[in-house]
Amino acid sequence: MIPDWLEALRAARGHEPVALVTILSTEGSAPRRAGTRMAVTGGESIGTIGGGALEHQAIDQARRLLAEPPGSWRVQDWPLGPLLGQCCGGQVRLMIEHVDADPERWDWTDYVERRKPIATFFNDGKAPVTRFPAEHVEAGVQPPLPPRSAKPAKGTIFIEPDDRRPERPLLMFGAGHVGVAIAARLPRLPFRLAWFDSRQNRAIPGVSLQDEDAMAACAGEAEDGAAVLIFTHDHALDYRLTAAALRSPARFVGLIGSETKRARFLSRLKEDGADASRLTCPIGVAGIPDKHPDVIAIAVIAQLLTLAPDA
Image 1 (cartoon, rainbow, N blue to C red):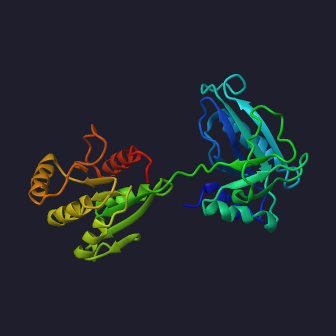
Image 2 (cartoon, rainbow, N blue to C red; image 1 turned 120 degrees about the vertical axis):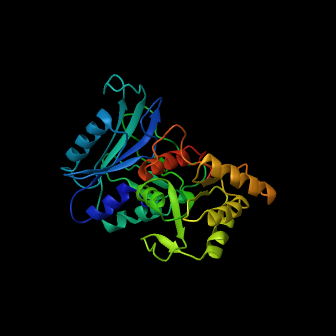
Image 3 (cartoon, one colour; image 1 turned 60 degrees about the vertical axis):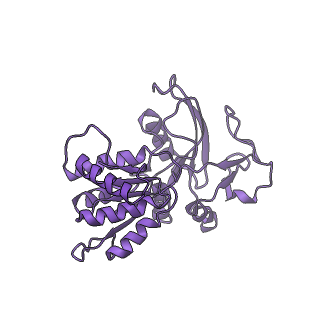
């Protein structure tokens, strides 16, 4: 998934000035972590460094910097409590730069898209920073920015953290109302969706139409760390997919249904010698009585987001 700020930089390139705001480091409690970025143009901001007064001030400074030559940059420490009146109580170090649209200075964005760490080299004074793949930095030459210095000294190299979350593989079987509601909410969330249905009348964008044998094979091949959601139109197919998914190393196997359905499936799985300890049925965080598909979708996504980030 391409970060919002990177899409914005590419869209603005050569068309309008754009500034990049990067959290270089944090101390104590802070709304976002190091590596978080947002892009700012004269009319909008894309992404977020945590909102509130910090983000408001950063956007204002970024737009002021757009009046200066491309390549200009500033680094500043922001105490969130005494200076901004936020309750976090920590400190955030921001770098704000007027991004140079020179194509030779844009190669690093392709590297970011491929999830490779980037090194930023601070030149003298306000000269544009130089970015290059961090793998080109010699071992041991990775000094962090001094936490409270006015600005990085010439020659400082900063290895930029990657703020993107790992995407958990999500196999979803069934393109009914709940499946559609879940899929609609997944963009910008840390999941990599593969969506299946066996009904030819469910030709919905994003759905792979497969026969039942192919669907069962896919469920049985779920990778380690994946989440599997099962809510097809047919209980017999639900059982076949559940048994197959439980034979895989999937991190989570979720089945839509009542406590009665759960009891029947558990009894059959035991007879078939399947380990049902990873089966979650009903699905969704507990305590939400509403059964509307949109509500179920939110409850299920919330449940998946509670899984340990081991994908």
